[in-house]
Structure formats: C-alpha cells, structure tokens
Image 1 (cartoon, helix red, strand yellow):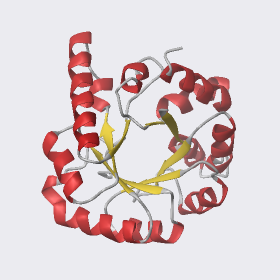
Image 2 (spheres, helix red, strand yellow):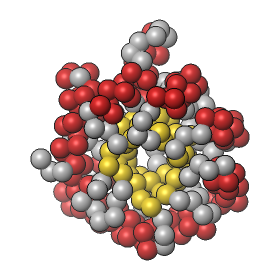
Image 3 (tube, helix red, strand yellow):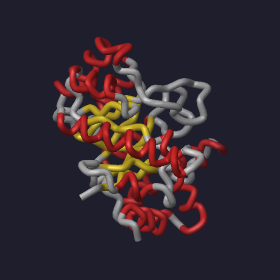
Length: 239
C-alpha cells in the first residue's frame, strides 16, 4: 500500500522565524504519526534555515515509523548521517539561495562522487534514496551507483499550467517509475504535491511512498496537524 512521509521542515521554519523554541518539529512528528503518517522526513540544510542538528538527533530517538533524512551530497552531512543513523537518507541537490529544491540531482554528472557516498552510507546500514527527475539516463545511473531507492521529482507535474501538460508530466513519471522498478529500484516521489493534485501520482503502479510537506503544514496552520495528515491520507486514496 502507498505510504505517506510527512515533511515537517516548515514547522521548524516558523520556529526559526523568531529563533525561539516553538513550534517544536519533534512534537509535530509525534502528532503526525498519531494521525497516521507512515514516515517523517526532514531536510537538514547546510545553512540550517529550518531543521537544526538538535532536531535530527531528537527525532531519531522519538520517531516510531521511519525517519528519512534529506541532505546534500557533502561530507558534513554524510558524517551527521553516520552518527544519527536515520532509517534512510535521501540525497538532494541544494543551493543556498533557493527557496526550495528546484529540481532533481544530476547523478550522471557526478556518478563517482555519488557512488562513493552511497557506498559509505549503505555499508553502515543506511539505505540511500536519490532525488531525481524521471529521466531515463538519471534512473540508469542511479542503478549503476547501487542506490536502493529513487525519489521522483514531481515539481514539473505539480506546476503544469493546463491539463494537457499535467497529463504529459504524469506519463513521464509513470514511465520513470516503471523503468526504475524493472531495474530493481524502489520508488518514492515528492515535491509540490497538494491535496488537489496528489491522487493521480498516488495511482502510479509501483509507487511506494509520497513525501509531502508544504501543503500539509499550510493546512495544519488552519486546522491542526493531525487533521491535515488524515486529510492527505484520504486525498491519496481519492476520497
């Protein structure tokens, strides 16, 4: 059954706006799990704009589902992951000036480097997922570096301006998912998914988990995180 990973970064964004102690993303993770979240996702950015090192360590101690640590492919983050030992790591591209992640990781252009990181983490018992576009070459390279998962970037689908483009992007995602599964990869997806566009992606055969954050936290600001998570689970089922 398709599962939901709730990204709680923007709980930390609210906290860091005042650099105080609330709201606490660790408390948010507990409530999200109580509401049915199948996993908790956080992105520890190099500039620490939202999630902090303290959060990651406490989440490792408190999360009862699974903890997905998103991070840049840099030595500092690899060392933190090796210390914290999340249930899995998702390597993502990262630029300091970006508002949010702008696209998939280019595995082809840095295959040796990514391969080294994948090997280092997986040798320590931490499965690695690669956040990539649904591109044939990137998927093939993900197989080559021996990642366990990929996470397909759904941003272009989410930002499509009309139904024709939306269907085109959905077809690309479905083809990428099928290619990856046939090659032995496990497949997640995320970025820009909302209550209104999630169902078609949820219907892609073989998809394992959707990682969703901004729309859930935005909804949670109005109705509470437990209701927001339950409503997303329903939206994924077309209800």
